Image (cartoon, rainbow, N blue to C red; front, top):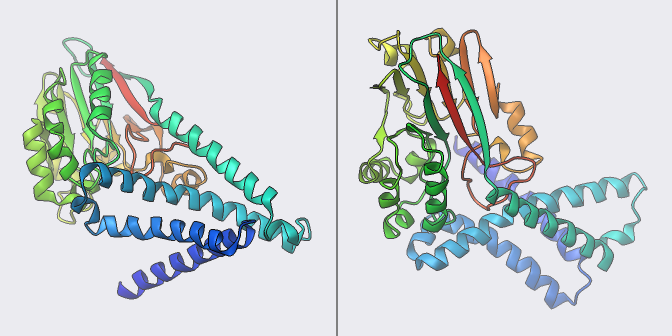
Length: 362
């Protein structure tokens, strides 16, 4: 395990060195200016890892937020710099790109900078434009009336998704006038301090429908005790390997896979009223066949973010049976959400942030 971690760190350092070396080479600046740019880029990476180790929580909230946003945005910039330099190097090796393009070239540096800047602006605008996904669920089981549920996942409230943004989402959800709000984990990004200092729990009480949720892996990253305290303050009905009956629905929630001792799904559903429409909340969309085998009517999951940005989305799509969108296996329907919020820099490139408005009717 330690050897694997060391190998990953070594690869990350080498890849970053490759990108920073190319940045240094291509910039048409004096040596001191080149080192300044490269130094700022390296500092962004260092600040991000330092933040993960507790630095953000030791800063004033505004500074922690700014540092989080800048340092995690560097990952997106780095990704596209890596792609650009790999393409240029391959082109040079194939004698399609002149060597001069990679050394002290204002046109190359300017073009790469402009393209990445456009992508970031587009990605941020696209992230802030939340997509409403309607979903019709037909039930063979009796319902006294149609039920409207807003379903969200991966809020990632914290240093980047702050109180003002969460209040905007609360209004957006309330405008749907739902009977029920279901959350498939990762309400907290990884740091509970911003949620406490800005009293985001109070905004959960402004939601005009009951909130039922399961845990995500980021609640464990935050610290499970801290996360559970916040859930209680927010008045959320939390399902950890448990189920609750809400009118004509049975809602079951699995603990996250981060907990190796979570119950098997079949054990979780033992004793529930199978004549009612059964909804399963399970943060990570693995082993989807289990819900079908257990007689679940509908499973709602998140976690994948659909990769957040292209081309990471291609990798994520290859990792999961279904990384985003609706699916049906037998009589069981599924929806894997790309998430309302996001981890890290607030950019959506080739994916979108969404909330699901589901109508369940007989």
